[in-house]
Amino acid sequence: MNNINSFPYNSQTGSDGKHDRVWDANDFARDRQMFLGNGIYPNPSTNLQVVSLFNTMQVTVRGGAAWIEGRSYVQGRIRGGRIDPIDVTLDIEENTSGVMRRDMIVVEHSLLRQRRDIQVLYIPGSTTLIRNDDVYQLKLAEITVNPGTTGIAQSNITDTRLNSEECGIMYSMVDNVDTTTIFKQYMDYLERKQTEWNALQASEQLIWQEQTARQESDWQAQTQAQKADYESWKASMEAWRSEVIAEFQQKIGFNFDNQINMPGTTKTFDDSVSNQIREQIRFSYEDLLVADMLTTFNGDGSIDQVLTIFNADGSTFSASRQTTTFPGGKPRTEVVNYVG
Image (cartoon, rainbow, N blue to C red; front, side, top):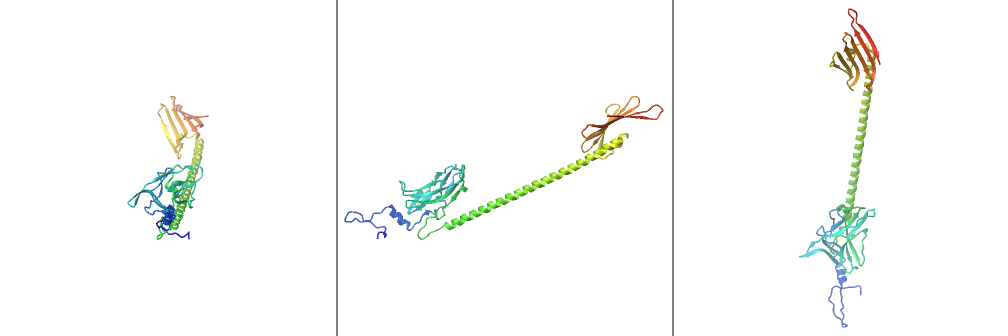
């Protein structure tokens, strides 16, 4: 009959002077476990929520209440049946290991501590709960601590309060709300959306890379085509210039004016020096000097003409001198002297 209990009844003193019923806290806790299950209080929604503290190496556990193994935990002031929540700040250890670390924040009931109480604890490097006759933990959140990080963002905190296997909502014998399934559905949905988002990012990145590569290829092709066009045009102009110079060589004995009507050339005229006229022919597209004619009117009535033809680099290709005299009453005499 030792496993059959009736509770509570007042104790009576026996003939030996001892009480026949002596109750302790465990008796009351065991009785309360019969109609109140473990978990955090359902309201408000921020009850014992773990949040980032301005992306520092600290997190805040918001005020609230929990029920563990027939015992209550209140993080705040009770006024008129309501709780004025009080936040608790916890320091997160730095990660110098070089690999990602998973920590957790728990509400822990313990009979091993001298105070025998319930506390909010930070447990680094572990996400495995302890649950035995002396210690019982509810996991509020898991925290991902990346190597060398200097701050915990909200995205590094996984809220586990709605997971009935790890924490859950406090319930009565009438209303037992198992939120494990919906929590797992939520996590599956979140992971699926994260996967879709990563795939979308990867796809957009690939499209951008392909567009960039295509634009680069098109630009290179256009540049090569323009270069080829220029080289072809330059080669044709050089060939044309060579033909012009050849014509100059063939017509060296003719009047300088015969050359100025050749396509692509311009002629300049300068008579600023007394008794002299300088005429020059240039290629328009490069402003290169092709030929120079210096005509000098001498005092004896003769005329000297010096014709110089130039290479593309400006050096002299050929030079000739022609002197025209007009003896009295005699036909004109022309004497041509080639120089260079």
